[in-house]
Image (cartoon, rainbow, N blue to C red; front, side, top):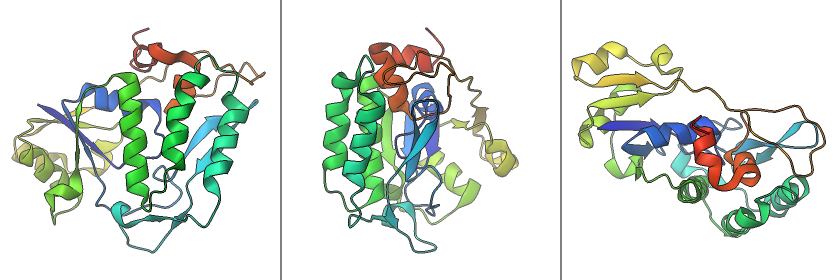
Length: 230
């Protein structure tokens, strides 16, 4: 069984979902340290000729984990994000198909970032028709960290193969995986090109954006495109 493990990100990029699609089981790593202003509380969307961040404001205390990170709901971030999506994607072919679903998720009053991210990820998986089983790491109540945490999670679910991101071998203890007889596969993702339209006049393609850029532009063909099968 192939398992992959990753922190729950906000509106993740295409490679995130390619990794899930390659896996039999995907574990959302919500009980590791939160890193502010990386990909856990923000992601990028296309604008007219450029890109911009969609950021979820959080109440940050050093050392807190992702599951403990609260959304700063005193900031009116929801309306701002929804207006940005309407402004930049309102004329894309599939905006009206998918926007109501994301609007509903964003408008819901969730106190914690991980709950929002998991809801967004699950909605994207449903739209893409990716049926990989999803588990949450905090449910296992493990006390280990770094490579040993990954190995312990693999052993708990009886996985014989761990699917790592491209940079995984640079920070993981590969010998430790071998000692526990767990194979390591490394994701090698080539970002596809696809039509970016809507309100955008600039024809230059911008890669590594949020999955919603692909969904709004390409609809039901998005999974084939992100997996380079179109």
